[in-house]
Image (tube, rainbow, N blue to C red; front, side, top):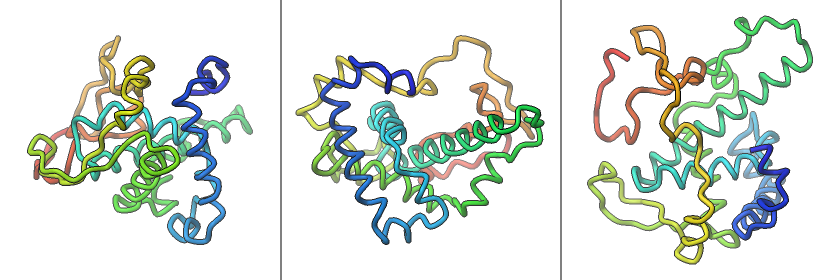
Length: 218
């Protein structure tokens, strides 16, 4: 993401200009009392173009698989985890002798910010709205019943005005791609899959909570 923000060709792209337009809207929101009331413990950390870029890539990767609610949770978790990684990097940068194994866990980080599932959903929905409303309008929210998306009525679609540009300049998160090495094994007390999942601890089951699956053994 950092490399993209330093790439002049990337920065001059029309879609990126829309992301920076959304960033201007985000900056306005970040100074409003309702924004501070909505995210009181971390509102001052959210005014970043990186979170909009992450939201864009996650929506592109998952919008055809899940509905708006599930996508909001995926996006909220992605932003929260990126916030966590930035916090860890800053701690390590300030003290290179720090014992990495004894650093704050992602779970502890979320608890410190009172980031429960509802607030994760609201966080993701807020950033999706930044890209789904004027003046960005990269995505469109519509209401339809789609059994493939676990019965969620609200779904996201790519604005047809930007569809061809997105197809030619696809940006998706690495976690949505196949692994090029062996994944970590799953067990009763450890999270497997992508190597970083040891810290992020994503569930083996993805998608909507409405499918009522119960995870008894990771």
